[in-house]
Length: 220
Image 1 (tube, rainbow, N blue to C red):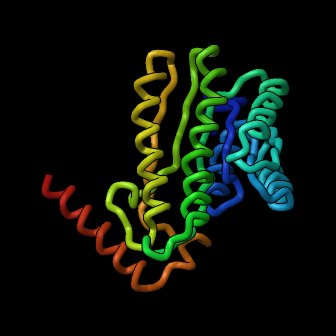
Image 2: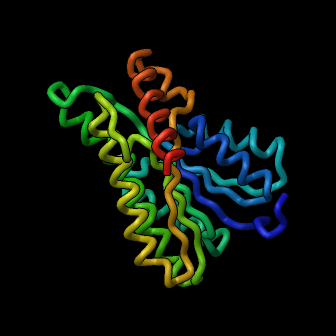
């Protein structure tokens, strides 16, 4: 455990997905108090119990849709009321609804953009207000490498992740002078429940693109 992290306060959206669980386990193992945010109350309760079995920390849950501004605001206000501060915000909530652009419905586009991008915007907007008062904070946006390289059949997802990178760059300029760090992490291909639905062809194309990026990076 890193003692300087103990009793820090973190919000994690999309907390019970594969990546979210790994993030929360790492935070909890360092004594960080966590607010778990997600749509599925049963999964939130299960995750809270499992984290508390292995870690000595405090955990609360907020059952909400990150695209609902008022519900998100109520959750943030509740966290502040309980713990009096928010040190870390991790925007990890994300969904996919893949389709070629000529077949993609308005609903498929809007659902992904709203969850992945609008949810990030709302979280940053609500939490940054308190971080500015504290003159301290860490905002981490979980983006994706596809936001940089594109991916067939994922115009909505790619646009949302590219947008997250854009928000990250902008907020780092807006908030950096206030003692707030804003960064994005762009994972490559990770075997999760979300990626398990991809076809083998898409997975192989994806891996080839990542390999080419690695080769270009080595040449530099």
